[in-house]
Length: 90
Image 1: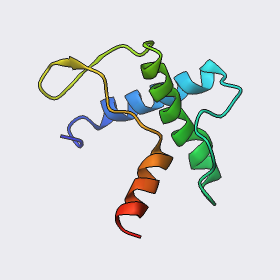
Image 2: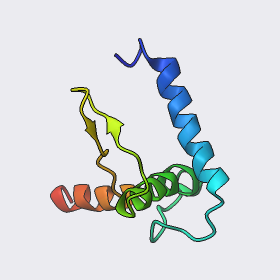
Image 3: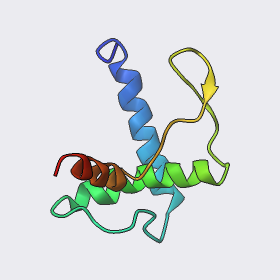
């Protein structure tokens, strides 16, 4: 599925990243930093946190899931997911 839709997926990812940068967010939405992954934290993680914030404020439109149903994506701060993984397997 990914190979067949690669162009659309890359285009969508770049559009989301551009949206975050165009929003000109002045404060960090994700608390803390991921050590030695500064560029990833500033660009990818903060973009996901921005989308999660939009969802929480009711400003993110619903998307289409694999079953063609309209739903919100499950968005959380990636830092929280990393912490959860470490808790599960220290």
